[in-house]
Image 1 (spheres, one colour):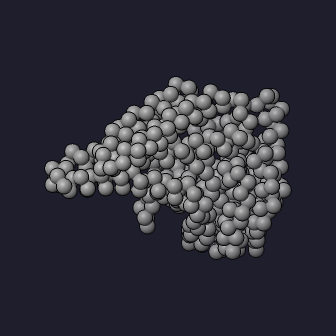
Image 2: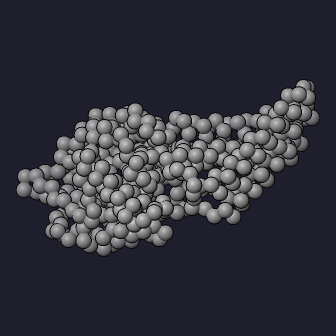
Image 3: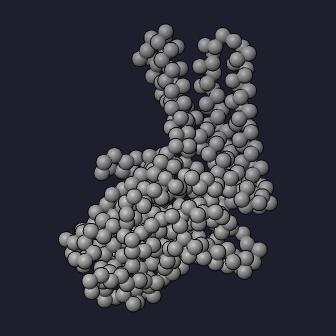
Amino acid sequence: MKSYSLFTILLLCLAILIVDILAFYWLQSITQIIASDGLKTAINIVFWGFTIGLIASIITLKITLEDIEPKRKHKLVSALSGLTISSFIPKIIFVVIFSLMYFSNQFFSETESLIVVPLFGLLSGFLPFFVIMYGFFKAVYKFKVHHVTVKHQKLPASFNGLKIVQISDIHLGSFNYKYHILDRAIKVINDAEPDFIFFTGDLVNNYAWELIGWEKVLDKLVAKKGKYAILGNHDYGDYSEWNSKEEKKENFDKIKTFFKRIDFKLLLNQSEIIEKNNEKIAIIGVENWGKPRFKQYGNLQKAVKNVTEIPFKILLTHDPTHWSKEVLKKTDIALTLSGHTHGMQLGFQYKKRQWSPSKYQYKHWAGLYNENEKYLYVNRGLGWVGFPGRLGMRPEITLLELKKK
């Protein structure tokens, strides 16, 4: 909410009010079959009490946001956004479906209309509500492993069968110190016995204090050959107000130091050469590089300077737009691993078909992409930010296996 103007917030509140007025109008068609006037009155009071309370809370939070302590601020914004979404979307669907049912009631007899229309109307409102609740409380922590095989001619024979686990966008502050939740993900990762674990950015939402206690959880991650990480746009503290440049730098330094405590090597526009049986591959990590409005800290030219002769290169870069802008046509990097999009935490996936609103913002938003033997994999993220749930876009652990082609 902090990034939106008061005018935008007021427009949101107006939209909520308009939708609720329409929903209440159609609700009367259902409550008229209730015999008890007391129950009807109670339903009306609850309906408008929730609406007025929600709108008042949104406006109050926006006005007082700057004065709220950061740890409490995140919880309040997340809770309120969850309430707004879980109320607003079902009511929109309810209004649309009920309107269609009502104006097409010529297909039903008068008796059927009194039963069918209210029944379908209620289902159209409650079903989306329960789906959203599932996304908030269940799916958001229901980790999914995506198994991916990448075959490439330039992969040295000594690295055939190399197993990589990629995780991304943990956003630890969103877990509110519920350490046990990530224990399940860590077990899945360790059971895969990966050679490498790569983390592709957004460890936190904004602040270093989000990391308190998490080293005891994340240092359990085990990889045979090494663990590497890069930074994401949220790791720089750019979305917060700071009293001074020194305060922001101190926050940033603590985040970078945390990676040492969990035994991850943080690559800041750097590269690492991995050798086996006199054959080599390169791991390259750049700082965040994104198209505006996101700041560009990444320097790919600096990062690859010492590995230009290595035949097979793996690039870790947080934002997938970097691949199409600087990597695909300007380098010989074989495999790029990214995150950032979260698949917008909302979508539809069935076998090889997938859809998300994220596709209208990002050309490459989830899964594996291949152009001329140059691969990009976009991880859907392990955590969440903003919208406190996942609908059809479960949190992801990626297990990649590299094969010699």
